[in-house]
Image (cartoon, rainbow, N blue to C red):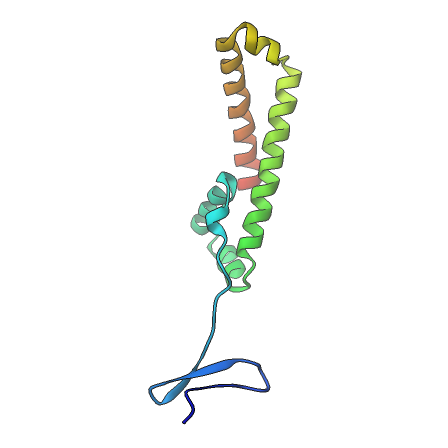
Length: 125
């Protein structure tokens, strides 16, 4: 018996293991290591609270793409909210130069509010 062969109809290659030919199946590369904070948190959320959705995405090999899309969208919304809130509240570089403590306090408040909005509206916590 040959050590390996490729089925002409399906294009799948097989390797002889013992007395049985097994398909040489390879999973697509997992890009979840490159996810940002939002994508990682979203992955944790769907694993814990939306198991069917997570499993369906995983089985269709669409999980990584979906996580990247959510991560990108969440980053865009977060950055946009921080910019809008800072402009609306008059938090400028001049304030940063004049009173660093006040600027840090204001920016912490802004980033916390923006983070909460992204958590609740995009990530789903």
